[in-house]
Structures are given as C-alpha cells and as structure tokens.
Amino acid sequence: MSVYRFQHPVARLPIVILALALVSACAASNPDVVSRDGINDPNEARNRKVHAFNIKLDKAILRPAGQGYSKAVPDEFEDSINNFATNLAQPSMMVNSLLQGDFRGAGLSTVRFLTNTVLGFGGFVDAATEFQVPQHNTDFGETLYVWGAAEGPYVELPVVGPATRRDAVGRVVDMFTNPLTYSLPSPEKYYSTGAKLASRLGDRGRYSETVDSILYESADSYSQARLIYLQNRRFELGSSVGGDAADPYSDDPYSDIYEDPYAQ
Image (cartoon, one colour):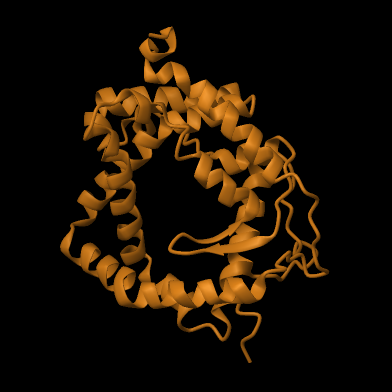
C-alpha cells in the first residue's frame, strides 16, 4: 500500500493546482486578436444562441426565484448568507494570492477568514470589516492574468453568463483551489457551494431592476452584457495590480458602461 494513500487531502492540493495551472496556462496563452472596438468575439453567433438560452432560463426560473427569495428573506439574513459565502471563499483567495506572489493579499484573506470565523460566528457576521481589515477579492482568472495569459475571445457560458476564455478556465480551476474542499467532511464541504448559490440568487433579486434593464430593456442585450462585462473585468484586473485598466473605451471621457450603444 503506497504512502500516497495516507496523505491528508490538503497535502495533495498543490499537486492538483499545479496540474490544472499547467493545463489552463496552455489553454489561455494564445495571443488575442482584438477588433478595432476592443471586442474579441469570433464566435458571436454561437454566443448569441447561448445568450438566448440564458435569457429563457432567467425568465422562467432565475428571475422569479430571485425576486421571491429577496421578498421572503429579510435583508439582514441575506447579508449574513453573503458574508458566510464570502468567508468560505477566503481560503481560495489566499491560494490564488500566493500563486500571484501577492503575499499581502494572502495575508488579508487569512486574517479575514480567521477573524470572521472566530469572531463573526462562523462568517455570518463580517467582523473583519469592523476591525478595518480591508476586503480582498481575487480568482484564478486573475492569477492567469498575472502570469501573462491572454484574455482570449469573449464567451457566454450556459447558466454562468459572460466570460472570456481566460476567465472561463479560471472558473473551472477555482473549483479545486479551496483547501476547505479537501479538509472538511461531508456534508460540510458543500456548505460553500450552497451559500454561494443562495448569495447569487439573492443578488438576482436584490439587483433585479438593473439586470432587467440589461436583459429585457436593451435594444441588443447581448452586446450590452458583453460590453459591461469586458469593461468591468478589464478595469478590475488593471486596478488589482496597480496598473491602468485595459479599457478599449478609455479614450472617450464621456463613455458610460451602462449606456446602451444600440439605443435610438
């Protein structure tokens, strides 16, 4: 019987991440081919079909469920669920920060997780913010960005929604970067997934008017959603490393990411 079988699951985490990182880096390393308007979307026809499916899914299930959830659940309880989901994601952010060489970010994630877990009743209360510990958010998509992986073409994923090839790969890898997944027994290891789904459902209800204006009131909801996602994500990544956001619309001082470019 091999020694490997007796290893604690957390000990295998670096091996899993390294293997996934090598695969994902290769998958997201091709140079970008960006059009003059800053959009790289060679598979637009297929993406639009997925977008149409997502709208039908939202209209039939997600929108009414989100609105019903927000009406039935008090705001304070929604905030607690969001805090709990965010706290359980901190170990994954710590791992990604280390992979990025961001030791300050790894420290912040660690302090926030310990503080909220111990003093915040398992994370339901954001005690770390009360102690003025800054928020820190990151993911494997940002890790690939730091490593120099190209953004890749825009893609709309079923259910998940807008992404780029780099971020789509990052989301898959992030399913394996949380040490809690390897250390907690069942069913506790699934609490993070459940809390995240509840948090997303609550966000759909809480920000229903904004989401509806994009999906149902825009002249071209696909182009609008694509524009907002790319601008926000590029700004987020540019700001996270202290550089200028890679915003193709930054030469227009009057550009508004929420303005419908197809409105008459």
